[in-house]
Length: 371
Ligand SMILES: *Cc1c(COP(=O)(O)O)cnc(C)c1O
Image (cartoon, rainbow, N blue to C red; front, side, top):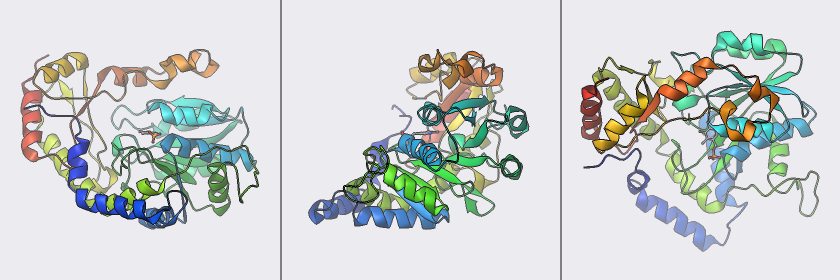
């Protein structure tokens, strides 16, 4: 039997009746945009995270774009300013910066945590640095008190890319409420996923929230009044209704992810493979289960032959992507740790709908792999 990397069909099936009812109710309501489902989801997501404001928007990339654009409109930063960012992240984190004419300054991850290396941040700060965009990559908390202290000392905005870490905690607080603002993606495969695209910005800053809300709605603070050249980037009512159902199960889903991840950690014992370093349980919601292998491509092919689907997160780091070939920061980047991780990383199947029997089959196959 084939083992898929992630079966969204199985993920959705567990709550299908409730999701169908929520969708049906929205269909019948006649309100499809900017309605009660959005308002309620925004209130519920803010309460869940423990922050003051949530603004729903079209997707996670837009959420991050709006945060930086709002800071520019508010005069906090201007095009040409620098934003520190982990060198190993999904391209969206970089796009949100470059889309706004800001300059990304990639910082290497720590090879053990795979998260931005807090020891390397200070040396990357220049007089033009305005923000640090922290990514909780793979579902693991990247925040540290030292990072917060640095941001305060240098007057940097701390922006969280929380696309992969819904529900993750740091000392009782949730990621997405630890910095000045956070972008969230509700892409179907994320821990809290919609049945299509969705995103949100969270913050305690009322002015920032209002600016983001305006930008994402054509730049219009009031009907037919346009303060900014914004775009249409709204969360639709059906997706908000779906997210409200799924939010009720997010903590249980994350607990289930931890059970699978723990099983992998306890049973994988192939010396050719490096497992993710463990943190206190609350600090990892295991969006992915990344392992490292010197012969990653051979391992992936071997697992494919055994019917086990794996993915690489990610095969090409942002600074080596064709879209950034002409940029000075990418041409000057020297990021050996990032490049090594992109050659060695492989993500094993992991989902809240997966059984321990399936995890055991993955373990058995991986343990039998020989270099
Ligand atoms: C998925 C993801 C995004 C973008 O989210 P979309 O909703 O797909 O636009 C941003 N950052 C990271 C780290 C992601 O994994």
